[in-house]
Image 1: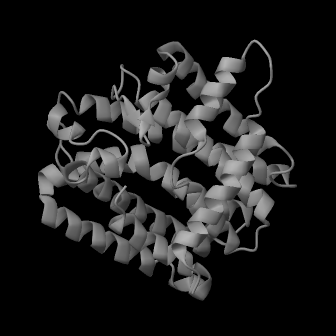
Image 2: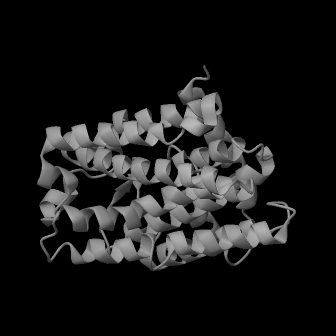
Length: 295
């Protein structure tokens, strides 16, 4: 069996190299913008989303270059979302991945522009013919990512998260918030692989089920880390939600019930992969990793 940590490290190395080349610094007036984009996207993170996308694409025999470009585009969206999420108008965080956030390292205006540029660069990568020879497939990739990242996906979830500071949410509202804010990009990580591979409806449905349960398990694990983790382990401030008075899976369910629910969701995610046989072993390991990680 292939070791998950080795596979994650290999994917991270490929994504790092691709983004490093994509964001080459030139001696131009916009140099600070490029440097801030590099700061936001290089040297950090587990690269879980591109890993999931590349593994999903591998189920259908998709070439590594196509999967890498699509996974890297997704990672650019994720990095943009973190830059904007950390801004004073949002979560107002000073630390991300163990180093100062972009607006602290540079300034707020640069951080806003860096996020904007990372977002648009993602779609530039997807529309390039190197991503897929079939223009229809490229259009499908763009449409799906725009939806996952937009008002009915990640950005919509962020809006609801801001409202949660002034309202009392129940478990249904928290589940919807996190499905949008976190789950939709994780869903795209699996759907994007299926789009690249022009997969059957049954295969797509299986991956959607896997991604749905994995996304919720991921967020519950995040909530647990916010309560139980340290700044050194997590690489960012902890107890932020409790301090802000926000409801979370942990505040509603309690630590033990939340942990049990995360494990149950990971098990359910794994069950969805039965139709893929041994080819999906790394995706199965990823489901366990999501709930057992320490950062």
